[in-house]
Length: 316
Image 1: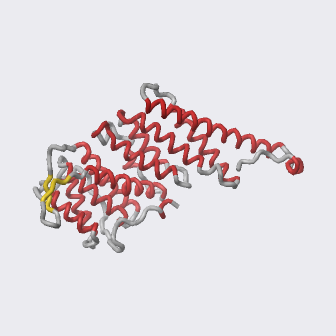
Image 2: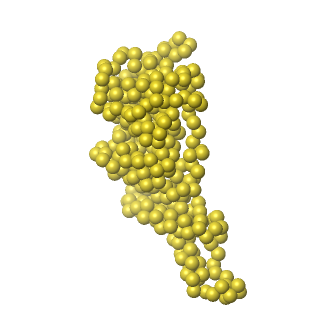
Image 3: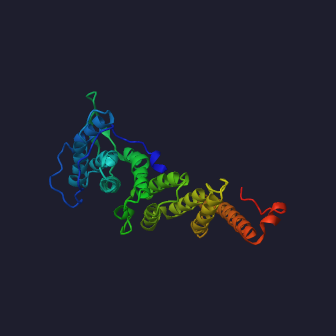
Protein backbone atom coordinates (compact mmCIF):
# COMPACT_ATOMS: atom_id res chain seq x y z
CA UNK A 1 0.00 0.00 0.00
CA UNK A 2 1.17 3.49 -0.79
CA UNK A 3 0.71 4.79 2.73
CA UNK A 4 3.70 2.72 3.80
CA UNK A 5 5.92 4.79 1.52
CA UNK A 6 5.33 8.17 3.15
CA UNK A 7 7.25 8.34 6.41
CA UNK A 8 6.24 10.50 9.35
CA UNK A 9 7.71 13.97 9.13
CA UNK A 10 7.48 14.72 12.85
CA UNK A 11 8.93 13.45 16.10
CA UNK A 12 7.03 10.39 17.24
CA UNK A 13 4.40 11.20 19.83
CA UNK A 14 3.73 14.79 18.81
CA UNK A 15 -0.02 15.02 19.27
CA UNK A 16 -2.30 17.67 17.89
CA UNK A 17 -5.52 18.53 19.71
CA UNK A 18 -7.15 20.44 16.87
CA UNK A 19 -10.87 20.15 16.24
CA UNK A 20 -11.21 22.32 13.15
CA UNK A 21 -9.39 24.83 10.99
CA UNK A 22 -10.92 28.29 10.75
CA UNK A 23 -11.58 29.74 7.31
CA UNK A 24 -8.99 32.03 5.79
CA UNK A 25 -11.42 34.96 5.99
CA UNK A 26 -11.23 34.95 9.78
CA UNK A 27 -8.29 37.33 10.20
CA UNK A 28 -8.26 38.09 13.90
CA UNK A 29 -4.96 39.94 14.43
CA UNK A 30 -2.65 42.30 12.62
CA UNK A 31 0.45 40.66 11.17
CA UNK A 32 3.34 41.43 13.55
CA UNK A 33 6.64 42.69 12.21
CA UNK A 34 8.36 39.62 13.67
CA UNK A 35 5.98 37.09 12.08
CA UNK A 36 8.55 35.56 9.74
CA UNK A 37 11.16 35.30 12.48
CA UNK A 38 8.69 33.53 14.77
CA UNK A 39 7.74 31.12 12.00
CA UNK A 40 11.38 30.50 11.10
CA UNK A 41 12.36 29.85 14.73
CA UNK A 42 9.46 27.41 15.12
CA UNK A 43 10.50 25.57 11.97
CA UNK A 44 14.10 25.24 13.19
CA UNK A 45 12.91 23.87 16.53
CA UNK A 46 10.64 21.39 14.76
CA UNK A 47 13.32 20.20 12.34
CA UNK A 48 15.75 19.70 15.22
CA UNK A 49 13.23 17.79 17.35
CA UNK A 50 13.25 20.49 20.03
CA UNK A 51 9.53 21.16 20.20
CA UNK A 52 6.89 18.71 21.38
CA UNK A 53 3.80 20.92 21.46
CA UNK A 54 2.02 20.23 18.19
CA UNK A 55 -0.63 22.83 18.92
CA UNK A 56 2.02 25.54 19.16
CA UNK A 57 3.41 24.61 15.75
CA UNK A 58 -0.06 24.41 14.27
CA UNK A 59 -1.12 27.71 15.83
CA UNK A 60 1.97 29.48 14.54
CA UNK A 61 1.50 28.17 11.01
CA UNK A 62 -2.19 29.00 10.96
CA UNK A 63 -1.58 32.50 12.34
CA UNK A 64 0.96 33.24 9.62
CA UNK A 65 -1.44 32.22 6.87
CA UNK A 66 -4.49 33.95 8.34
CA UNK A 67 -2.94 37.17 9.58
CA UNK A 68 -0.22 37.87 6.98
CA UNK A 69 -2.00 37.29 3.66
CA UNK A 70 0.22 39.48 1.46
CA UNK A 71 3.65 38.62 2.88
CA UNK A 72 4.92 35.76 0.78
CA UNK A 73 7.59 34.55 3.20
CA UNK A 74 5.06 34.48 6.05
CA UNK A 75 2.72 32.49 3.82
CA UNK A 76 5.54 30.17 2.85
CA UNK A 77 6.60 29.54 6.44
CA UNK A 78 2.98 28.93 7.42
CA UNK A 79 2.64 26.42 4.58
CA UNK A 80 5.85 24.67 5.64
CA UNK A 81 4.79 24.37 9.27
CA UNK A 82 1.30 23.13 8.49
CA UNK A 83 2.54 20.66 5.89
CA UNK A 84 4.75 19.12 8.57
CA UNK A 85 1.80 18.91 10.96
CA UNK A 86 -0.63 17.09 8.64
CA UNK A 87 0.11 13.62 9.96
CA UNK A 88 -0.35 14.77 13.54
CA UNK A 89 -4.06 15.30 12.90
CA UNK A 90 -6.14 12.92 14.97
CA UNK A 91 -8.51 11.99 12.12
CA UNK A 92 -8.20 11.89 8.33
CA UNK A 93 -10.63 14.79 8.14
CA UNK A 94 -8.48 16.84 10.50
CA UNK A 95 -5.40 16.00 8.46
CA UNK A 96 -7.20 17.10 5.30
CA UNK A 97 -8.20 20.40 6.87
CA UNK A 98 -4.61 21.12 7.90
CA UNK A 99 -3.44 20.19 4.41
CA UNK A 100 -6.02 22.56 2.92
CA UNK A 101 -4.55 25.48 4.85
CA UNK A 102 -1.02 24.43 3.83
CA UNK A 103 -2.17 24.50 0.21
CA UNK A 104 -3.60 27.98 0.75
CA UNK A 105 -0.27 29.20 2.11
CA UNK A 106 1.50 27.57 -0.84
CA UNK A 107 -0.73 29.43 -3.28
CA UNK A 108 -0.30 32.78 -1.52
CA UNK A 109 3.46 32.23 -1.32
CA UNK A 110 3.40 32.09 -5.12
CA UNK A 111 0.79 34.76 -5.88
CA UNK A 112 2.41 37.36 -3.59
CA UNK A 113 5.99 36.44 -4.39
CA UNK A 114 8.23 39.51 -4.75
CA UNK A 115 11.97 39.00 -5.00
CA UNK A 116 12.56 42.69 -4.36
CA UNK A 117 11.28 42.36 -0.79
CA UNK A 118 14.01 40.78 1.26
CA UNK A 119 13.14 39.27 4.61
CA UNK A 120 16.13 39.45 6.92
CA UNK A 121 16.07 36.72 9.54
CA UNK A 122 18.40 35.97 12.43
CA UNK A 123 19.96 32.50 12.27
CA UNK A 124 21.07 30.40 15.27
CA UNK A 125 24.68 31.56 14.84
CA UNK A 126 23.54 35.16 15.35
CA UNK A 127 23.99 36.29 11.75
CA UNK A 128 21.24 37.96 9.74
CA UNK A 129 20.61 36.70 6.23
CA UNK A 130 17.96 37.22 3.56
CA UNK A 131 15.38 34.43 3.61
CA UNK A 132 13.54 33.20 0.54
CA UNK A 133 10.91 30.59 1.17
CA UNK A 134 9.89 29.82 -2.42
CA UNK A 135 12.20 26.86 -3.02
CA UNK A 136 11.52 25.43 0.44
CA UNK A 137 7.78 25.55 -0.20
CA UNK A 138 8.25 23.79 -3.54
CA UNK A 139 10.13 21.02 -1.74
CA UNK A 140 7.38 20.59 0.85
CA UNK A 141 4.72 20.61 -1.89
CA UNK A 142 6.51 17.79 -3.71
CA UNK A 143 7.73 15.69 -0.81
CA UNK A 144 5.11 16.21 1.90
CA UNK A 145 1.88 17.84 0.73
CA UNK A 146 1.24 15.85 -2.47
CA UNK A 147 2.08 12.47 -0.83
CA UNK A 148 -0.28 13.34 2.03
CA UNK A 149 -2.97 14.27 -0.51
CA UNK A 150 -2.59 10.87 -2.19
CA UNK A 151 -2.58 9.03 1.14
CA UNK A 152 -5.78 10.71 2.25
CA UNK A 153 -7.45 10.10 -1.12
CA UNK A 154 -6.51 6.40 -0.99
CA UNK A 155 -7.99 6.16 2.51
CA UNK A 156 -11.37 7.31 1.16
CA UNK A 157 -11.28 10.74 2.79
CA UNK A 158 -13.51 13.33 1.15
CA UNK A 159 -11.05 15.59 -0.69
CA UNK A 160 -13.61 17.80 -2.43
CA UNK A 161 -12.36 20.92 -0.61
CA UNK A 162 -8.88 20.39 -2.04
CA UNK A 163 -9.72 19.29 -5.57
CA UNK A 164 -10.22 22.83 -6.82
CA UNK A 165 -13.24 22.15 -9.03
CA UNK A 166 -14.53 25.62 -8.15
CA UNK A 167 -11.26 27.40 -8.97
CA UNK A 168 -11.64 30.29 -11.40
CA UNK A 169 -7.95 31.17 -11.64
CA UNK A 170 -4.66 29.34 -11.34
CA UNK A 171 -3.40 29.22 -7.73
CA UNK A 172 0.12 29.78 -9.07
CA UNK A 173 1.46 32.53 -11.34
CA UNK A 174 5.25 32.73 -11.02
CA UNK A 175 7.43 31.58 -13.94
CA UNK A 176 4.47 30.90 -16.22
CA UNK A 177 2.53 29.08 -13.48
CA UNK A 178 5.40 26.63 -13.11
CA UNK A 179 4.38 25.50 -9.61
CA UNK A 180 1.33 23.86 -11.19
CA UNK A 181 3.73 21.64 -13.14
CA UNK A 182 5.77 21.02 -9.97
CA UNK A 183 2.65 19.80 -8.17
CA UNK A 184 1.49 17.72 -11.13
CA UNK A 185 4.94 16.14 -11.50
CA UNK A 186 4.83 15.06 -7.87
CA UNK A 187 1.42 13.44 -8.37
CA UNK A 188 2.59 11.73 -11.57
CA UNK A 189 5.72 10.31 -9.95
CA UNK A 190 3.70 8.73 -7.15
CA UNK A 191 0.80 7.44 -9.23
CA UNK A 192 3.06 5.99 -11.95
CA UNK A 193 4.60 3.67 -9.37
CA UNK A 194 1.42 2.71 -7.52
CA UNK A 195 -0.24 -0.68 -7.61
CA UNK A 196 -3.55 1.02 -6.91
CA UNK A 197 -5.50 2.79 -9.62
CA UNK A 198 -5.13 6.58 -9.41
CA UNK A 199 -7.64 7.95 -6.87
CA UNK A 200 -10.42 10.02 -8.45
CA UNK A 201 -9.46 13.01 -6.31
CA UNK A 202 -5.97 13.07 -7.84
CA UNK A 203 -7.36 13.11 -11.37
CA UNK A 204 -9.85 15.81 -10.42
CA UNK A 205 -7.12 17.97 -8.87
CA UNK A 206 -4.92 17.63 -11.96
CA UNK A 207 -7.80 18.34 -14.31
CA UNK A 208 -8.70 21.44 -12.29
CA UNK A 209 -5.11 22.69 -12.52
CA UNK A 210 -5.06 21.98 -16.25
CA UNK A 211 -8.31 23.92 -16.69
CA UNK A 212 -7.27 27.09 -14.85
CA UNK A 213 -3.50 27.13 -15.41
CA UNK A 214 -3.56 27.85 -19.13
CA UNK A 215 0.18 28.52 -19.36
CA UNK A 216 0.83 24.92 -18.30
CA UNK A 217 -2.06 23.27 -20.14
CA UNK A 218 0.17 21.41 -22.57
CA UNK A 219 2.61 20.25 -19.87
CA UNK A 220 -0.22 19.01 -17.65
CA UNK A 221 -1.83 17.18 -20.57
CA UNK A 222 1.47 15.39 -21.23
CA UNK A 223 1.87 14.53 -17.54
CA UNK A 224 -1.63 13.06 -17.33
CA UNK A 225 -0.91 10.91 -20.39
CA UNK A 226 2.41 9.68 -19.00
CA UNK A 227 0.97 9.06 -15.53
CA UNK A 228 -1.98 6.97 -16.70
CA UNK A 229 0.00 5.05 -19.28
CA UNK A 230 2.69 4.06 -16.78
CA UNK A 231 0.17 3.18 -14.09
CA UNK A 232 -1.71 0.96 -16.53
CA UNK A 233 1.28 -0.89 -17.91
CA UNK A 234 2.74 -1.69 -14.48
CA UNK A 235 0.35 -4.63 -14.47
CA UNK A 236 0.96 -6.09 -17.92
CA UNK A 237 3.99 -8.18 -16.99
CA UNK A 238 2.63 -9.79 -13.82
CA UNK A 239 1.28 -13.19 -14.70
CA UNK A 240 -2.08 -13.44 -13.03
CA UNK A 241 -5.35 -13.17 -14.89
CA UNK A 242 -6.74 -10.60 -12.46
CA UNK A 243 -3.70 -8.37 -12.91
CA UNK A 244 -3.92 -8.61 -16.68
CA UNK A 245 -7.59 -7.69 -16.56
CA UNK A 246 -6.73 -4.69 -14.39
CA UNK A 247 -4.00 -3.65 -16.83
CA UNK A 248 -6.48 -3.93 -19.70
CA UNK A 249 -9.05 -1.73 -17.95
CA UNK A 250 -6.44 0.86 -17.04
CA UNK A 251 -5.03 0.83 -20.57
CA UNK A 252 -8.47 1.75 -21.91
CA UNK A 253 -8.71 4.57 -19.35
CA UNK A 254 -5.21 5.82 -20.23
CA UNK A 255 -5.82 5.95 -23.97
CA UNK A 256 -7.91 9.19 -24.10
CA UNK A 257 -5.30 11.01 -22.02
CA UNK A 258 -2.60 9.99 -24.49
CA UNK A 259 -4.79 10.93 -27.45
CA UNK A 260 -5.26 14.41 -25.95
CA UNK A 261 -1.54 15.09 -26.43
CA UNK A 262 -1.97 14.48 -30.15
CA UNK A 263 -4.44 17.37 -30.43
CA UNK A 264 -1.74 20.00 -29.79
CA UNK A 265 0.07 21.66 -32.71
CA UNK A 266 3.73 20.83 -33.33
CA UNK A 267 5.07 24.36 -33.01
CA UNK A 268 8.22 23.61 -31.02
CA UNK A 269 10.58 20.78 -30.16
CA UNK A 270 8.90 20.00 -26.83
CA UNK A 271 5.56 19.50 -28.53
CA UNK A 272 7.08 17.40 -31.30
CA UNK A 273 8.88 15.20 -28.75
CA UNK A 274 5.73 14.86 -26.64
CA UNK A 275 3.68 13.81 -29.66
CA UNK A 276 6.35 11.27 -30.66
CA UNK A 277 6.15 9.82 -27.15
CA UNK A 278 2.35 9.83 -27.33
CA UNK A 279 2.47 7.84 -30.55
CA UNK A 280 4.66 5.26 -28.86
CA UNK A 281 2.34 5.20 -25.85
CA UNK A 282 -0.68 4.63 -28.09
CA UNK A 283 1.10 1.86 -29.95
CA UNK A 284 2.00 0.12 -26.68
CA UNK A 285 -1.49 0.54 -25.21
CA UNK A 286 -3.24 -0.62 -28.38
CA UNK A 287 -0.94 -3.63 -28.69
CA UNK A 288 -1.77 -4.71 -25.15
CA UNK A 289 -5.50 -4.04 -25.51
CA UNK A 290 -5.61 -6.12 -28.69
CA UNK A 291 -3.51 -8.91 -27.17
CA UNK A 292 -5.76 -9.09 -24.12
CA UNK A 293 -8.98 -9.10 -26.13
CA UNK A 294 -7.60 -11.77 -28.50
CA UNK A 295 -6.53 -13.98 -25.60
CA UNK A 296 -9.85 -13.67 -23.77
CA UNK A 297 -11.85 -14.34 -26.94
CA UNK A 298 -9.72 -17.40 -27.63
CA UNK A 299 -10.31 -18.78 -24.13
CA UNK A 300 -14.05 -18.28 -24.55
CA UNK A 301 -14.31 -19.99 -27.93
CA UNK A 302 -11.57 -22.63 -27.89
CA UNK A 303 -12.23 -25.74 -25.87
CA UNK A 304 -9.95 -26.70 -22.99
CA UNK A 305 -9.00 -29.90 -24.81
CA UNK A 306 -7.97 -27.98 -27.93
CA UNK A 307 -6.02 -25.50 -25.85
CA UNK A 308 -3.83 -28.40 -24.70
CA UNK A 309 -2.40 -28.66 -28.22
CA UNK A 310 -3.19 -25.15 -29.47
CA UNK A 311 -2.79 -22.81 -26.49
CA UNK A 312 -4.31 -19.39 -26.62
CA UNK A 313 -1.92 -16.42 -26.91
CA UNK A 314 -0.11 -15.78 -23.67
CA UNK A 315 -0.36 -12.39 -21.96
CA UNK A 316 3.02 -12.77 -20.25
